[in-house]
Image (cartoon, rainbow over all chains, first blue to last red; front, side):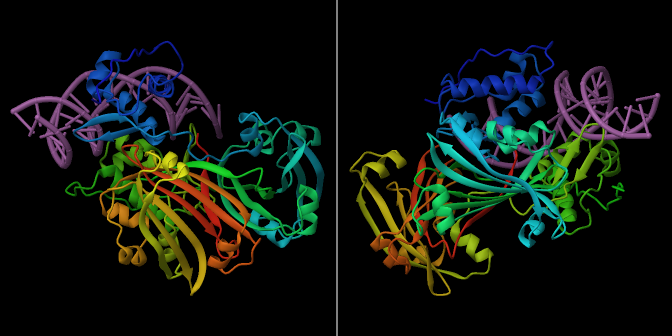
Length: 249
Length: 249
DNA sequence: TAGTGGTCTAGACCACATC
DNA sequence: ATGTGGTCTAGACCACTAA
């Protein structure tokens, strides 16, 4: 029970890919493909290092990344073993567009508004710009199978990005930002619910007063600048937030 | 601009606390108390190691934990600097009770049901037990300032925990599990919205058809066992999910 | 060119779990 | 008593950034 498994592992020292990363990729793939089944012991680090011709710290670094992802558990005096549960993906700063595309939903986007406006107090506070200063405003409707699924209103600080309507319809805002060289770092997010106003109901094809799922998000880049403030509403019959959490230890 | 700061740091080699942890704690505290202001460069690792009498890997380990928490950013060729944005807390597997208590809300809990039932198909699938097998069922109402805020229905596998009604009302379910020696590891969570049924509306003091925020969660311990399946409804006027996300890099 | 973080090595001793 | 992971050292070379 819980046997140690001899796995075919190898590293390419000629590759520019870090050795620890090569190893962690191979282990992750083995876990994902069921070669390493839940409960399997990985074998001790020293032996693994010797077998691969690596040093122990390098092997530890590889294992640690998978522990951080929740795929492995280490126990002192016991060993390292594959976690039993079905880990899918830890929560990440996700793009609705990418999520839908990954789910095979073929999302389409209709840009309703793409303009520059004066920042309201709320927007100014979120983005850290002066109230009344210029900000980009984008309103979009996201549809799947021709049916509206989400209404998204985003504000961006000026001069950050060239917001082309065509590109906005062809891909997601996050991908556009990444392409523009913006390194996304973190986001503060609030998820709630409320009854649809008449305007919201009409946009989404719901009845006035129908329950809507709401999300507000401020996204920061790695210098700490606020790069986006989003205020979205979703039809709860068509969308819910689903994710995996890891206990921070 | 962005000056390197000389910080008073020291480690106690007699302490059982790991050196890298002592260092990361001191840095985190300095950041939190504003001694290290956003944008500050930390000074190179070699020099820092020398100043503290530590090796470079140890210093790197300390810094890395703060990078993982999103407090620091490393740039090759540039240095390590304090992130600008107001990081509050990364999303964690949180307990509603603890969240409310931390917010000074003085939550109270009313246990409506605490019994053993036969597992429905949905519960059986979530917990990985046989359909029709025995499971614990707990229904609770969470109130703040005497007003209902959430209705929580939880199912637990048998024999895991002694569910004392008094303890359930005095604290949260998660704290009870931790106290019982269960190591929480991860959870799969879905957040959505729907209109309140007549029963839900009455329990929460809302109108039938009013929007409710819903959350379903399956929690796993570190051996991969499902230890809890929760199905909760919240009054959106009184509760929303708020959290910080980090981009996984 | 100089300085930074990124990666890697080959050891060492310790704490903890299991037998 | 043995074996595991946890921590730590004192170096090394490389890749990238900025001046």
